[in-house]
Image (cartoon, rainbow, N blue to C red; front, top):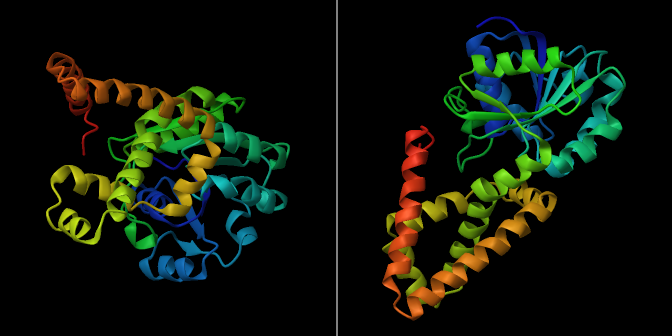
Length: 293
């Protein structure tokens, strides 16, 4: 615990940005938290909810004299936001993000980052299907991984940010950006893609069947609908900006799905049992790691 920064600017007050601001305020990791969102409605809501010490009316006001700038915006606009805030960043300022793709963010952000400022890629492995300022809560990052991709950032800047995030309850790990993108392609991006597809298939069923699918949804389908309710703008940008890794994992998944299809068709119960036994072990590993809720 302690003060790590004088001023933190949070750009984007959706679930992640609002939760960070609330957690930062609760843990008193800085002296001032200023928030900004491109949506006037979101700014008004954030101000009413008391998210941060102040909600700025423009980007320059938010980032001026900030020591840490957290970009909690869709990955598709990261570069544009950094280009807009660049003239107002103080020397030595650290910019980090919360996007779930990293190679694309580095490509978009670095050309606009002023000399003397530092960028540390970040990705909190936490979230819900809800969005907007009211979705935020300070314990969102407790016991969740927050991945950092430092690349060429100074060691001291990385250490300070890591200690800051740890004080919020997160478990911080460092990772190379392209390796990160492959890891999250299978752990996060592909599951969302499958969920969107399954729920999309249900919407195309004939009327009576679709109604009964909704009416009698079992826990498995309910879990898919929860994931498929996630923010469409954010996930559109994720798939477009991590296309290479997602397509690679999707190809592997399709190959495994074909294997499973053949096993069902030919009643090869031993193959099904072997697969289900192995996947059950993976599930137990997730529970043992405390990542099941």
